[in-house]
Length: 432
Image (cartoon, rainbow, N blue to C red; front, side, top):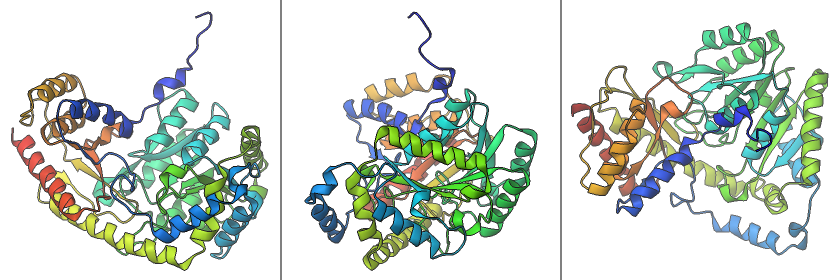
């Protein structure tokens, strides 16, 4: 080509949660039955949206207004509802004008990083959620900048690591939280959130909190919203309906901007995000129209509480089952619907394997395991031998070796079979 087409940052775009699907699809064509534990789609794992929610959506779909454009920032009635909902809990107060809708949080994330200054960095947790880490790295034309979550301390942040990286990286302008966390299932305790807010205040940073799983907590945990703890620090909360309702196919998310009056630079960034959405005209109208009716209905929280209890039971079963393998580091989860399992240091080798009875699948896997990280090797052998599709944790910008699973399977017998098989396969693999 006459000029270079691809930016340097494009090589940082990766999403192993979906990449593993390509390999699973290949094995599926070879006759391997696949059990999908790679992606957090409740619908794919047999979740049934309540009929009363479907009734609301069907009624709104008959409203001619749902087929038209809405305000560029989003449906005003919905933004007003969400602002009032936020303000009921105290903390940082907002108006409808502080809320901006996107076509899913993926859209919000990519837009936010795109409009940050090219030299500015956002430091996020590791293991990292790929949508954030890839977008930030692509924006910066550099590897993601992360702070460590400690599997030996309930996956809580290593605060000294975070402080050091903030102090010695003057390009850091923001700290990212994912609360509840994907991929670990950790929920940030309030005392740690308070420390992070104080760190942001000390170094004049903004905070970004991905709260897509905010209402998905269990085992006695509570997730504190950013607005409850942020004080006078500028910040953005990212929210949506894809996981909690669940309606992932709606591709509907929004951001809430706090304390715009405390920083001219931050206010200018928020204005730029508004202008970017204005250029696109608006986000999808129908899901926005449904939000006040669904989230404003008492039945939603009754429904969510029941689902959280079920997710908590699955969390406990999975942790108890895999804890029978002493070579693993297992943490019980408290939010979202994932668990990250880590192999203890030194237990994985490059000569370990599982028996794969399908000859075509065996050939494929043996090709894939050449020169890959040791947790990728395990994941590929598990996929070929059992058809269970999980995601290697080193693909989440982490030095740890392990894998992520979901807590979504609603078929209890299939759940028990899947994780018993994972446990037994790990034992076989480590003994090989």
